[in-house]
Image (cartoon, rainbow, N blue to C red; front, side, top):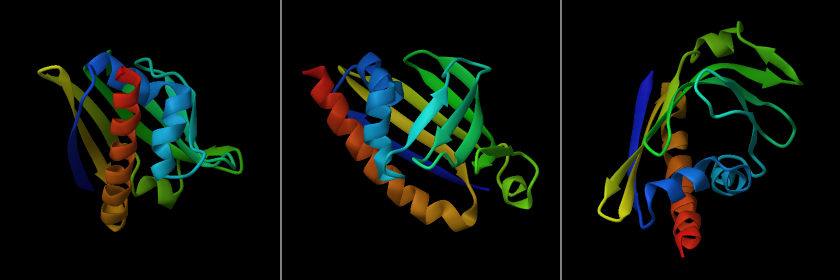
Length: 148
């Protein structure tokens, strides 16, 4: 596994960035950088299952490993969803199962420093880095608009 580490400063309080990142409507907006129409089903609460989905219903099934509101959230990716079925056992899944995706929110004066740390397979490192750059720019834009 490779690690992606990205940081951005958003001119809004942590609470605003947190809400913008995780609320269903704004989640759809910033994650369109990965797949237009992306959404989730489930809960961001610690220990809960969450499904990250594309418009056709395919995607990933994960568990929230940690949730400290306005500070830190950790996602443990467990499997994939294809044609409505959850797959935890295929070779495709085994190549990246238990990958983590962590979001850290820190105060920087009246701004928020958001750090993304994510495990990726080597073949996805560049494309995921590029998509995260676009996604963080969108998240920054809508968080700063929400602040006003």
